[in-house]
Amino acid sequence: MSKHIDLSPESLLLFVPDVYQKSILDIDYTSLKEKGIEVISFDIDDTIGALEKNYLRYFVGAFGLKKSKAKFEELRQMGFKIVLITNSNKKIAKMYHKKLHTDWMIYEARKPDPLCFEETLKRYKITPDKMAHVGNSIVNDIYGGNRAGITTCLVRRKGKWGKVYESQEHDVGKILEKNDLWRKHHIDSDGDQYYQMGEKQKGICKSS
Ligand SMILES: [Mg+2]
Image 1 (cartoon, protein in one colour):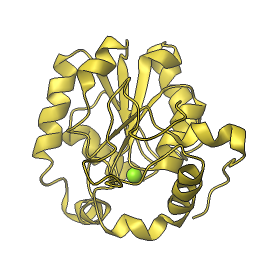
Image 2 (cartoon, protein in one colour):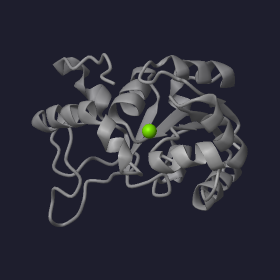
Image 3 (cartoon, rainbow, N blue to C red):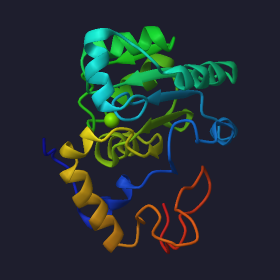
């Protein structure tokens, strides 16, 4: 599962998201709008739906997802185009695409390869400053998105199973922490390190 990633000091900032929130429901999309974002892409597994529930959905169909559906409707009304970008297969992507009425989808995207983000920019004829990506993986979603030059939003992993695949994520997180680029969740007793667009991480000296 280990992916080829560049962990040289000058590349570390590519692993730092512009936004970090608990879930897709907590992101301040108004600030994205104000920044000029027009297209938002979302990862599926462990971002919209927990990986273990997606296994089940693969066999029984798209159940639940009420809050995500309402949020996407709200985003559409705000004028955003919504795209799904997943490393998962066509069946999962299509199911979410239909259920959540998204505008477009890319499956088997091979994130962190930035190609899927560049394809999206091309499709909507926009420059990278007009697109944001939301996902739970600091490697696939954040490193991938930042290399395409788009705005990146990290959310916490939704399910429990996904942790099994996260040893690389964990190692990257440790390196970022050591370099004062990242803080563990709830490291401060008086709160957490969630931040919105334009805000800085608490206690971090360097900044992207
Ligand atoms: Mg994911």
